[in-house]
Image (tube, rainbow, N blue to C red; front, side):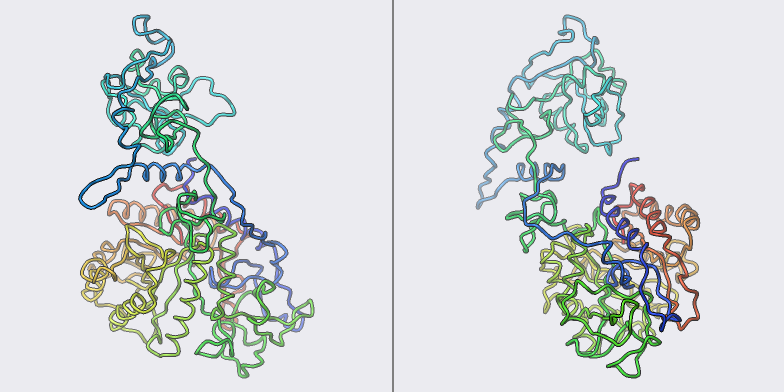
Length: 614
């Protein structure tokens, strides 16, 4: 199976979840009637806290500032793009010095090989290499080691230690009379594409791919240090060096390694914190939801009370176990003591349960350090419109946003804002309030100026959750369409965004959790990105497989046809037994030791049209 680029990050997330799911919270017998799940994951990634005993299962390695290097094809592509980029000075166009040698490189003598071994007669050189001027017209066959090109692997007797080589003659049409430079350009249009080596052509790596070039002379690639080059595709090693000569591809610094410049990093970004980072886009990423909504009295937040840990405790200074609303206790031994609130709730080990607040900058930084360790790209930070007009609430939420921004910049993670327009007190006016708040965030907080703010299609990314939900009190499709158009087209350029809609799971069919009016179809299709809310929509692995085939797969195809980015929801399990006052079952949707979430990861990464996961 061809691996989607986000597989590695998902593996890190899923393995972390698997380990944590084997642990259980250590709660004293005095509070045995309060149920805590054998769960995992930081509150700020899924909205649920980590079990207390998880720490010994995931002790994080200390960060070393060594320049660890890896070979990465993305780095080679970036280098090639930089090589081809011209520099403009006034009205005169000044090119990279290697660009000026393009005509020389293209006319030097190059190598021709028979399309396959023993395919050519002696008049064409038989099985021998033939030297020819680069301007001569000859046949084209291309090779690559990247399976995503979709080419066949037909090499005879490949070396076991060597990567698979894939070949093709139709690129996309048969080209029997191309110059060397034209041949290289045709190959370069495909992932990792380059001209084939003589051994690859002789070994039938591109044989049987059409065009009847088996008995024709075909352009071959240039070996290292054996000739000038202009493009990577000309070189057998797939890399044309800065000096205009084919050479071994340079190594680059892996994410989290120390760096001084973007060009050093495999991911192409050296963050302000001096570490190589993921590029802040939605392409090939895992982006988590980050509520940042936990607070306690005295944490410095303007609201100055418990939020989300407890259900309005009678005595805020001494909340009781009966007032807890979470399903799992957080592990807190990696936070600074001064950032924690110690309660009188006793755990089995005799210690008191402690809780943190996202109003504390070091708390949020710790969450982002964990994401850095486990290869998670970054977050959409939730900005709830409910009560945002109240100064204390807005100041608190903006404080957490500032913490998120600083933490992302310090760790090389990415972040973007996600508004939530669902709320009992909200109505159509929330759309005007949302626009006004975004203007303030751009003008006063300068959030989109951060080098870690997520961008797509050269625009800042913004998500709005609640669009089209039957339960949300926003029914005016004309006003919604006007807001979308403002964000995409009519606003001042600095306020325009790549707009992702947080939509109901049945958005495409407009049934169940979606509003049914036909006007909503146009609303959904006008969005730049679609993120359906899938939490709770399946309850077992078998349910998920059925749901994926009947709902998600058609959704993905619809978005592909409409040119809309599709971002499904991956979630580990669910329970809100304590939050709902025992009216809901314990461990309502079990995590199954991480297997529940892993199945989603497997299906999503196997779909070539899914490149981003929430």
